[in-house]
Image (cartoon, rainbow, N blue to C red; front, top):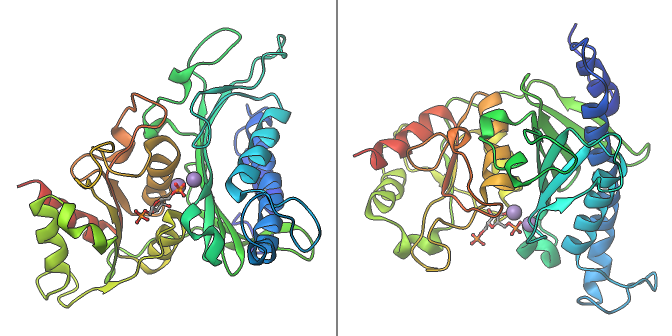
Length: 338
Ligand code: AHG
Ligand code: MN
Ligand code: MN
């Protein structure tokens, strides 16, 4: 029975859980904790615009409160929410160099799950009131014993139990997949609930929009430059010059691609010798976005390999990312398979 529009995200999660008789509800509780933190961050993001007028960190905002950097604020709230319910053993956060162990004090029931999170994606856009987001990924632990470890998050993307993002835009949206389609919920601030607004999202098989930071053109490999030049002519699947749209927040650029089709790419670039594998991080950016893309009928590769097949080796490992409509990603791949 298809879930009707307007259903709350928590009711949707409970309905999904009922499809699995052996479910204990712990996994659902992790999702609802993430949703709770997302509501808190959404409220702060919307107020931060006011705080932003008064300038950067350390000053007080119009309510006389201490202005906190939003990514520090977001990280604190998501980590608190995930540590609260004891079902999460370890967390890899973009904001924390080391793996976070949450249930040291819970000797009786070590958490069965591991979470990777980008608490605030698109930080460069925070102070200019442009859409930003949060990206999360949930794995089942594979290590035994009391404390989890890095291996619990260093799993292939195909092993993710759930992946999702929150987009703090003109409205706040939650989009996630537990491997049974991709569903979008829009926050109704008047009731403080995410309501099902976009059930079973399907990405168009082809688009005519490409999304990339053209400023890096001089630093790309020749085959990537050749691909982008082809998108600006007629020799591409659209048969015409594609439109360029680039927001600079992965969540926002991907969200548009999910609904309108086309491709988002952050290729390797040779600009920064410190980041030889590109800018985006595998655990809490590329892998969750790839799970959503594939569950919506799209594709996600690192140029040649399927993102979800890649086993990460370190928490903050970077990867090139080409994600979007099947036809457009395969067209990009054709330049790199040569
Ligand atoms: P974060 O703010 O979490 O560090 O992520 C920023 C990322 C991603 O959101 C976006 O696609 C990319 O940085 C934009 O990078 P450029 O500004 O180099 O284009
Ligand atoms: Mn990010
Ligand atoms: Mn971030």
